[in-house]
Length: 218
Image 1 (cartoon, one colour):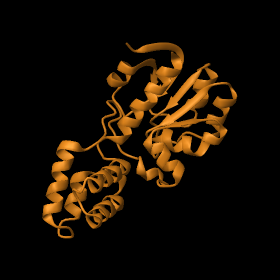
Image 2 (cartoon, helix red, strand yellow):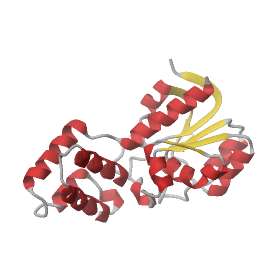
Image 3 (cartoon, one colour):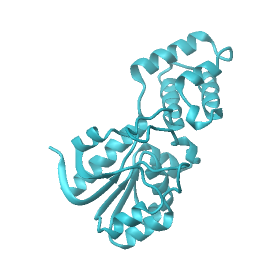
């Protein structure tokens, strides 16, 4: 059964559907965070603030100072998956808690750019309409580790994806752009991998973060 606890605020958008999130944790779910939203949640007395999704380019993004304000006000602030992973990697030294593979990749320096987690989504349903580079990166790594594609194929596919502007980024576009540069047999094996074994790493990290907050609430 979902755990319900007053004082939990979660900023969630395209990383995980609201229905699935509520199956894990009952909380005050709010849209992707923009500048000032975490400050406001702390001012309202939130005890736990989980930042998963936030705006990057549409409006001003979450400021470091407002996270520090929330921590100093006594709130537990956690981050994962998207904007949350990025901010947690920058602010864990002040007490923000990072969760998941994407947070660890930012923390280690394996990921650097905001562009890794950026995507475009429907402003009402939050349904993503582009693929975040981090998902492409990790799925290419997984396919290479499984022996489905060669290191050379992996690198060429990734460079094609990285070169795309983030609203246009997709597996289909990446595969189209690399045509002629990689053996068709390898591309077909990767297409089959995508159809059967592709993972959504942002979603997985969002689930981990919600489970962490659920355990804290208990």
